[in-house]
Length: 173
Image (cartoon, rainbow, N blue to C red; front, side, top):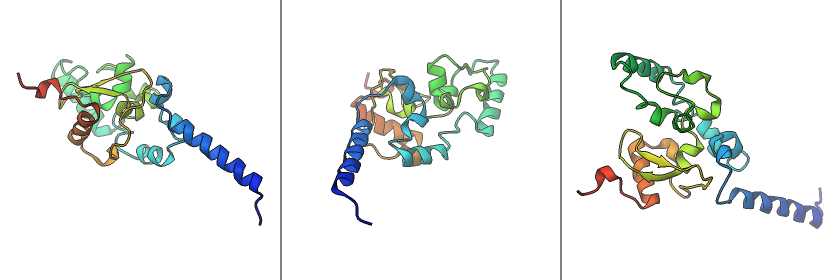
C-alpha cells in the first residue's frame, strides 16, 4: 500500500502538535491531580503508575488497618501523619482528615498520583511527608529518574536536587 506525501505530512503535523501539547510547562491544577488527564501523552507512565503501590497507597488494607489502629491507640493524636504521604492531594484539598473514610474519595484524590510528584516546590523535612507543593499548574520534576521504583528517601533526595533546596530540618543551625 502506497501512502501519499500529503498523508505523511498530515500525520507528522498531528504528531508534532501532540508532542508540543505534552511538552507544555503547565497544566490546569485540577488536571494534574487526575492521572487520567496525563494518560494521552504519558501512556506508559500512567499504566505503570496504575499498577503501582503509589496508586493504591490509601487503599492498601494494611495501611488502612494500621491507620485505624494508630488513630485508636493515640486517641486521634496521630492526626494527619499517615495521610500526608498516603493521600496528599486529598489532604491538600481538605477532602480528608485522619478519621475520614478514604474509600469514599474520588479516585484522583486517593493515593500518590501525578500532582504529588510534579507539584513539589520544597523539601521542608526528610521524613513524615515533609514536602511543600503548589497548585499553580507548573509541572516540576521533569527529567528525574522514574519514581515508581524508588524508596521515599530516594525521592526526597531527588526532589532536593531538582528544587535546589536543603530541607530546614537538615540545615546547619
